Image (cartoon, rainbow, N blue to C red):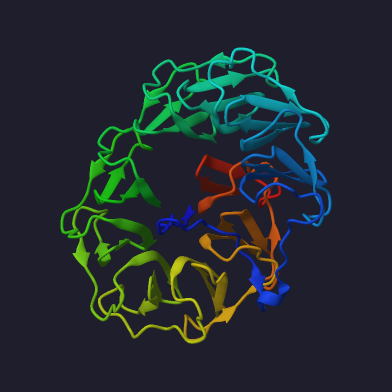
Length: 435
């Protein structure tokens, strides 16, 4: 698996969409005719020819021309926290009125709360086969197998009932909770098991896989390792003098950790760590990558590189990098890409010696995650996922079925692309065409 790291986001800053552009003149605000609601948009989804936006107080807006014009399709909806697509149906999770369903692209809505009426605030939605799951604010998880006609509460073993995120992976359904960590169900929610054994910190900034091991980087407790798919965890911090870990990377037998105190390296699966900061002028390391024989570190002060596995670092390579706060890095063939804090995406073909800004079609410039799948480059932003098939020359948005569009992390495994969001994990098996 090629794993991209989740970036720590400064307080008050929202993630934005990634794309390629030459100048700000190519950006257009898409709040065209028909848009009367304040521009607080919680969720976006695409279904067929339509783009849908769930707003804070105006229900759902629909556009058939990529946001040039909008039509408000309220139907009893006010504050819409989440959107999900299942077959021909569009579902909206609201703040206070439960779930609504539309079978005609939002023209009309039907409230579908039979069995759900006591838990009206829907924090998350997820689809698995014929089942739709709703994560609620205090009622745990509910399941429907008939497109919302009836709901069943499925909380056996779910000891924290404030469910902020839901994710599906194979036969497993995962629930991220307010204070209880992660729960897993292998029977469509009939029963739940907490999978935090040994994980003493439930804020996980990054995941990486090396051989049979899964590693988790936390915001104050260092690194944890699991050899049994998360069933149990062991803290592996020997020599790790800074435990605020933002990123992980693997190169051969070496595991690297980017921290709020520089870079650490382990050559024995995390058993011991050494700090490798010689020449590293900025030690707030948000992201790490390996490209062309170099270990690349993206920091709050630009890009640094090492040609000797981190033993020494060359001077920063920031030529023409007009935004030096680096959130994410990705490698594709001879190209290295950097996602920045407000400057969009930059590309270099000489391991960082010179950079070119590539934002044509990128409607947001806070780029929190990048991933490569064969010839395609993906960018995760606060407006969902963007895809480029020409090394960043142009970008298109690919959010169909992505009901949470704040995308902090992206990862590729085989033919699947995974997106980690505020509302859980989404999977696409068709390069982001649908989620």
